[in-house]
Length: 321
Image 1 (cartoon, rainbow, N blue to C red):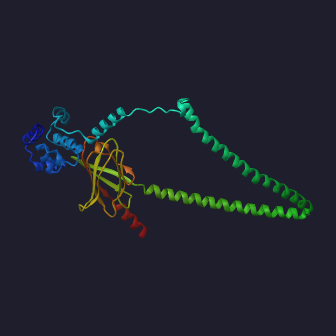
Image 2 (image 1 turned 30 degrees about the vertical axis):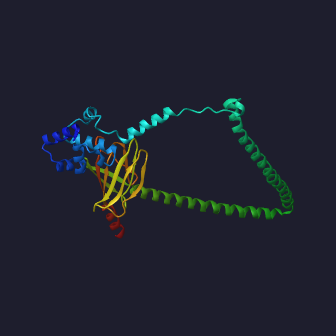
């Protein structure tokens, strides 16, 4: 047993809490609480959760976690995020930029840049030459054909009778007026259909409302949706995510690394879903595409998301009538 574990255990006993009471209060499994008091951190799921669980334990027994970490710095293992940062800084110090040397040792980087750009310039010139050849054969021949067609059409116009010309003009005017009328009707119908669809989309806009928060548990209600879908991501650190149905069956269980996203988590036919977040300050949760607000001061949070089916039933009743 460590001095940190002794201090936490003594604080727990002073508050008259058992390990079972503390488990209900912090939502941390009892075996992890025992491991913290005994200093047996090897049973934890990771170094990051050692610090997170100790912080929750300390807050539950009214101890300052920051003071504890400073006082018992040698006993608390570093989180995985701090180890990665230290390894990155060491790697950056060891690596040094390599200077580019030109062939024969003369010319320096400028000579290498010239030889890098030269093939691209030659390729560009070759492409321009090919396009010019295509343009010449295609457009030059088209111009010649247009000249021949124009000359033949001019000669045919001179032969036509004036009466025929006026008749052709009247028929073309009448057909153009009909086309303009039909196009106006089509445009009006398209605008009306677009307005109707836009109105339906606004009526069915998904709403996610936040309910009561008790301890580290918060409820949310989803309206105007057929099912529950989630998208969870971590930014600024790692976060363990557990998603389960109301029956207790697991839907999603994974530790998201910094910058990683879960993708779309489909709740299927479930109307109530529970989400447990191990590191809420670095976690973003979207419900049916709407980002929800998490409690800003809690590390571990339990979210209960309910699907409001009353709107669906009322709409179906109205349509039946």
